[in-house]
Length: 311
Image 1 (cartoon, one colour):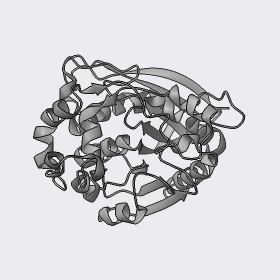
Image 2 (image 1 turned 180 degrees about the vertical axis):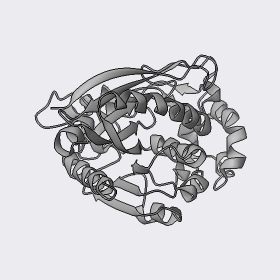
Image 3 (image 1 turned 90 degrees about the horizontal axis):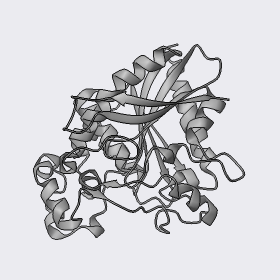
């Protein structure tokens, strides 16, 4: 069984005033001397518990522990600034995708240093779910943070049907969108940290058990509204995705709001390789799908095979 440890990653001075620490949990397979390290970032309205759901129902519900126990992968789950147990900035309206990615990236050196006290990380892989994938893409774009990246529930096409005309006018151009994100968020949400959660949504969780949705509620957190709105704008991630030169894994649900997986692949024009997996019958929140371990198995095999190329 993997051993887990809670970490407080020091990011003081790396970002906006008030952000001093990112909360994380690190799961290390028992007895390993070396292993790939997968770092997971949650999507909008979620905290890091999304990847480590409590196992109060029959079966396995923690993706982090599953990958550690079944594949020998070390897994860290990390709260973005302003989410979960991480520090909240004095001005949350500063938390756009580029800034959040910069803070997340800044915490990685301390995470790796801590991991090296326990085992030798053989490969450093970033994973994001939904909005978290947008942030991972930005981290890779601006900082080349990872040796490989995995995107779950992320398509890049946005949710144009939920946007107004002004918001849609910034489609396919993140450089134009970023300077006005705070203003657009004030108009749409009235706050940069939107309370509540979408964990019970039928749109996001078709066919899931009500008890599983209750598990998901334990992962509820505030929505980083600037990042959430950016992820809704079509094409806002185009430049970030086109910049990625490392191997990529994309996992979507068959009924995911992220759209057609082929459209995401087409945007990854520089990636050295792209592997895709569609989880049958699943919606957007794959961690509570009945067949969730099918996706976790595909992800785990990809990480192990990727790691084996150079070892």
